[in-house]
Image (cartoon, rainbow, N blue to C red; front, side, top):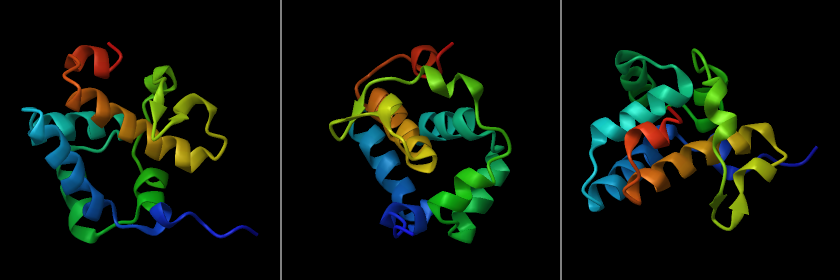
Length: 117
């Protein structure tokens, strides 16, 4: 059995501030980052806050997500030189979807485009 990728066991709360910092550096907001996370996972604002406080790891964060957005399969493009739509490992693909959405936010893309409206 291959060992799990380190990101799976990393607390979501330890990477979350990096998402927010990346967005804020480009004059976007924490509220927009939260909106993206909630769009992708179905967590309510209170549930998201609770997961951050609990230090839930990435794998659990995505496995327990209330409702993964079916439109997430429309997310295409590269993150760290890898096409998200080509990622075989399902959990890694979910994590990379979020990375891609935050990248799009930081690049100044309009929220309705990021949220595949």
